[in-house]
Image (cartoon, rainbow, N blue to C red; front, side, top):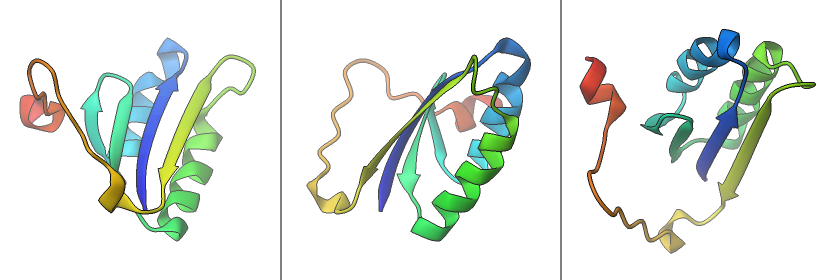
Length: 87
């Protein structure tokens, strides 16, 4: 499946959440990750991220697309790849 994941977390947890998500998905924007992932790996990823989150303060949005062939992605402006910037 294809997943788009966005988050809004407290400053103290931002780097921990980003680092954990980078293990599973592609970092596309400051608080946005996307990519192909199996259901099992997504469960594992979410379990690990949930341990970092403070559910009273933080938000995590998960958009699951079962058939990635139906995705049409358009980018207006610069196609940023945060992984390229920091490597």
